[in-house]
Length: 173
Image 1 (cartoon, rainbow, N blue to C red):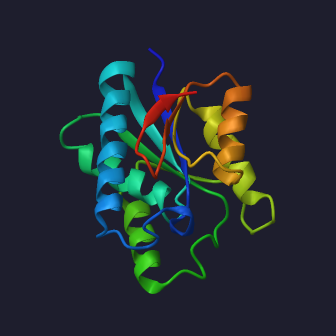
Image 2 (cartoon, rainbow, N blue to C red):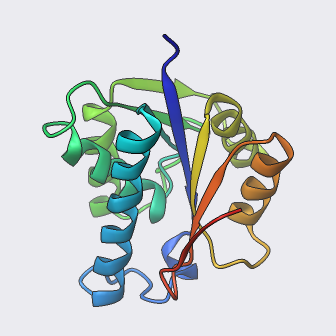
């Protein structure tokens, strides 16, 4: 039986209404909505493998949620798709610690390329979409890397569930 996979795409904190403040009630509500959607993928679609791009913001939120659900859903796995080895190099120490903590707990690491290039994030996003059967996107509908990833997923015929980070409305596109 083929493993069903779901990849995440979403905004960095700068593009979210609460910024870097994860204590903000809007962030807490978004994380809960994201958790609900992950559970929905497991229970309704039989997804057992999740792929995160490990960027600050939604990617890391989703990774932490999947890791937190492992005890309740035996057999789910997390793959970290790294665009390049230096992805977290310039981040704050706290964000780097969080990043490496997630990486240490994931089931699979995929490194797309050794060094940073202007298109390495794009390559990572395409890899995730190509590997996945389903996509969960936290997207405000505006042009962005997340928007390009959603568009690519649609071109590939992948079902996309979009969570609007402002209204928390979830829709299939």
